[in-house]
Image (cartoon, rainbow, N blue to C red; front, side, top):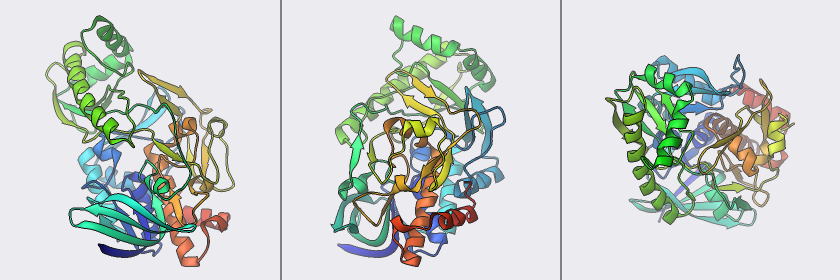
Length: 419
């Protein structure tokens, strides 16, 4: 078995993991980013969602409240006209991005920050010594590799490392469904978006289902334009799935592809603008919204979200509504216009372990709070905070749970974060 020693090991190279690794490395920590796929970026790349959520407040004059490393990503994309917006979709403010350019942007950010990367490397086990994770084992084509690190960041999205290491985690009995997105070309985007704005799309989906003409699981399906002409991203599926169960994942992937055939035929037959359209590509894997969540030093709640609670140890701002996906549609609960809440540092800290931080959708929160803070922008902001916290802990020999919070927040602001 091969061995690697590092200061900070980040498991999972989605948006949260990338931000964590970049932040830690920039502060001088030797940083290793480990990813199961053959590319960086996680769900925004593999799932093809097409939109960034959570950068702005939800009001008529949206304010950008996620900056820092996530904001740098936007600036790189803007240089090549690969992101545009913001656009307000029924109170949810989003940015649309170009998929290939985002993929290369993530590569650039990680490379420029001197992060060591292991792709095609699946976390398979954790070794624990008291209140410390001493090492993890990853598997790849070259066999097993044991990674020894002073600090670990779990950015797997499923709390895999936390769970393997004995931290208390919870998983809801009824999970939010997953979605497989796909891109369509040769679309008359103006006609398609005009039709969607009338509200007729959702009525047509329900009518097609009720008559048995088509089978579309998500009744409030989305058509999202991209920065490229005549191109849209389609989100028409709500597939039951447990992202921690390989049988469930396999069944969901196959079912999602069947649904894409149904929804594409529906669009060509019933929706203006799709008469001459064709499928460009399909998400590499189903997009997962919810699996395990850490039960950490603090559990962020629905009340915290909707009351726009500010915490003394706040590490990022979030204004995205509670967006709970159900079997057929989506339930929304909005914050007061222009408001945001904080995610506290304590929601990234495991009670049982002293050298683990959790970033991304599996931070310590309730099911309803997770339905807000799980989206890309706050995930990146929390990831940045975790990476910075890890590097400070190592450089200053300080426990993650004994931070000078005000000093830490000042360091975050110097990295460009908005607090």
